[in-house]
Image 1 (spheres, helix red, strand yellow):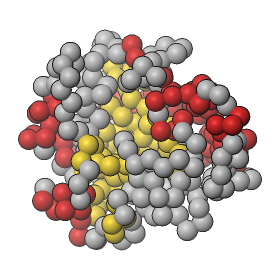
Image 2 (cartoon, one colour):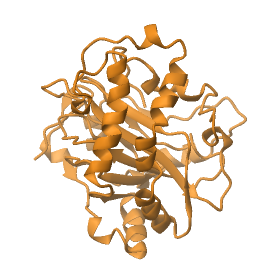
Image 3 (cartoon, helix red, strand yellow):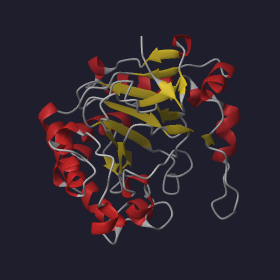
Length: 301
């Protein structure tokens, strides 16, 4: 049984389920691809060594401790409730870029362990986006149900998200969930596939209504796990997902990171690659929620 809340609402057990664990097939390319096609995701335990994750976690939280947001010792991730970030950094985007490009973190996000999995999934050499989404989530934060498509599809539509737990993330602290069989919700997926990037039309890819009622109406379930350090879930851009509320009783900050991957042989979206990626809006790392002080509220994708 899982204990979790979504958008402030307790999630009933009858609409909760566990990810199908594919760890036993982590070196079997055919099985990995079959699972991905069938489920819309692949869940793998312990892709990274715990020591690597601990080092990356300490690196990130030490930077946030420097601006007063995380208490000592940083690796525990305890939110102080205050922030000196804006007072000490004129350019919050530049600060967040420097945190997101920490060497220990990059050894996780673009290292050989995840490269191996991405290569297997695509059946060829894969390339990770340089622009990453590092997500520290304090108590009360969550992410609405949404599809990643069409945000990362200007280069190729063959894009996969790799979401990694940078530390333990039990269901009470707001881990990622996937809506079961949402990669088959064709009535929602087909309209966003037809987006014209030159028009002003913005498709509805984020569901901001009652998530539990929406899930029941779809005959679906929230699939999740009590994540351990180094666990990874990979999912497609037409798999609906979000994150539960962080309800930590110890004021612990959830830390995860998601990176998009694509076949190296296919066209890239220049906005997400290079030494100074522009990001979705052109504001670079400054556009991300992570660039905001942890004291500022946000409930978006």
